[in-house]
Length: 245
Ligand code: ADP
Ligand code: MG
Ligand code: MG
Image 1 (cartoon, rainbow, N blue to C red):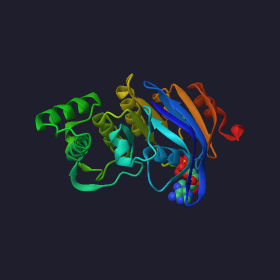
Image 2: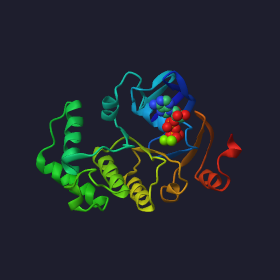
Image 3: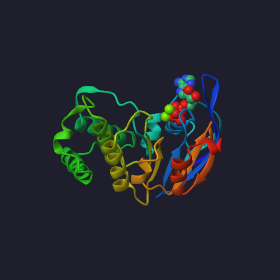
Image 4: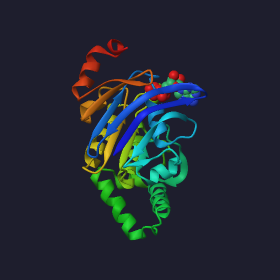
C-alpha cells in the first residue's frame, strides 16, 4: 500500500529526514516511535504532502502511484488521512456538518455526486454507533471546548467516515490522557481491515498497549534506526532510546 524509499526532506534548508525507507502492506498497523525532535511529525506531514517541506530525494508511493506531484487534498482523495495535530475550533460548525462537507468534497473530487441526505445520515449513525459516539456529540460545535478525549473522538470519527486507505495518526508530545489514548486505540482497532493500513506515530509506549502494532520502527535523527515487532515497544519502554543512538 505505502512505499517510502530513501526519503529526504528539508525545511528552511535544514535536512530533517535523512533517508527513510518504509513499506506498509494493506491490513498492517505500523508504529513509529522516537524521541522528541527525531522527525516523526515531519514524516507524517511529508507523506500527507504538506507544502512547507521540501522533498530533496526519494519517493512516497501509494498503491503504485508516486504522490510527489499531488497536493495534500489530492492525496486525501487518494485515501491518505492525517489526523490533525492541532485541531482548529470552528464555532457554529457542528461535527456533523463538517464531516458532511468533507465527504461531499471528496466525492466531488472523484467525480461522484453528493451523497443523498438520507444515506449520509445513515452512514453517520452507523459510524457513530460503531465507535460508541453519543449522538449529542455530533451536534457540538467543532472542537469548541472539546476535551483531549473529545478531540480524539472527533478525529477518529472523521477517519471512520472518510474510510482512508492509509490513516496516519500523529500523536502530539503534549499530554494525552488515558481516556484519549483509549479513544484512539478503540477507534483504530475497530476500523482496521484487510484493505486499509494504519501508521501510528507516537512518543508513548503506552498507546501501544491498546493498539497492537504489527511492526514498530524507531526514528532517530531523521532515520529509522531499528525496526521490529510489538516487543520492540516494550524494549523501548524499559531501556529508553539512548542505546540506539
Ligand atoms: P518529532 O515529531 O519527532 O518530535 P519533528 O518532525 O516535529 O519531530 O521535528 C524534527 C526536527 O525538525 C526538529 O529538530 C524540529 O526543530 C525541526 N523542525 C520541525 N518543523 C520545523 C520548522 N517549521 N522550522 C524549522 N525546523 C523545524
Ligand atoms: Mg515533537
Ligand atoms: Mg511530533
